[in-house]
Amino acid sequence: MTKGFVIFCNRSYLPIVINLINSVLEFSNYNIELFCINFDHDFTNTRVKTIRLSIPKENFFNITKCKIIASVQTTFDYALLLDGDMIVTKEIDNIFNDNEERIKHVNYPLFCKHPHNPIDRWRHITSRITQKKPLMKWVYSVYLFTPNHKWFFKETLDIMNKITDNNEEHLYATVPEEGIMNGLLAEYEINDDMGYCYHVNGFNYVINYYLNGDEKGKKHIEDTYTRYNCPIKLYAFHGHDIKNIEYGKEVIKKIKNKQ
Image 1 (cartoon, rainbow, N blue to C red):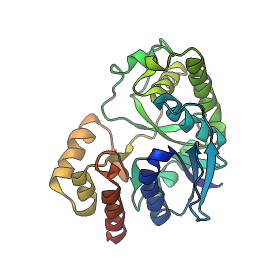
Image 2 (image 1 turned 90 degrees about the horizontal axis):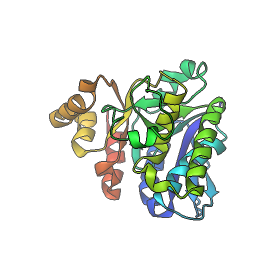
Image 3 (image 1 turned 135 degrees about the horizontal axis):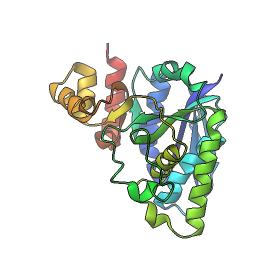
Image 4 (image 1 turned 30 degrees about the horizontal axis):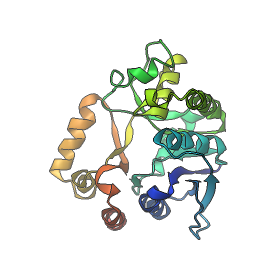
């Protein structure tokens, strides 16, 4: 079973994605497939395979659509989709081990739980997909999957293509692919996810909590995740301060030196 990471980005996001890729190369044993939107890039590293995706218009809706296209096209047998503004930790490969047996027995991707369950905030999206009530809380559109789950992405992509054809992208702001996939999970009455949020907010104090037990970071974890019954495993940081390129580089160095 080939395991690996699926990442996608456009040219403007590449500097942030380079930090993510460097963290995966540093802390993981598995390879990367990077899907580049309308550009080519050579990492000169045999562990990173780049695939060009050509799309006619780089608006936000179409960029998120490329996440789904990448999930369909990947060659990995067991993959983790990562958003570009993430940095992984030394524990990242545990996510494959944590879920390896479970993923063999489900016919849909395994998503990680959103701590705030913002179903009401984005009901304008899910209600266009289904009128069924979700059986589980909202999940992020980052996920583990195998080739057996590509039907789910193909259905998502079909919906997104029809939205584009009908010039209705504006009706699916601000989480188009995430809202559509949560709608499909409700439609198919799925009630199973990864069970925890592995990619916590990339604030400086949260990273310092991982590195040295910072009390402010600990409080943020407790207030943001555990109070919502969302178990937390620190396998990656997502967004916020790590979008600063130089700070992201420093974070990778600090994680590398963490005992």
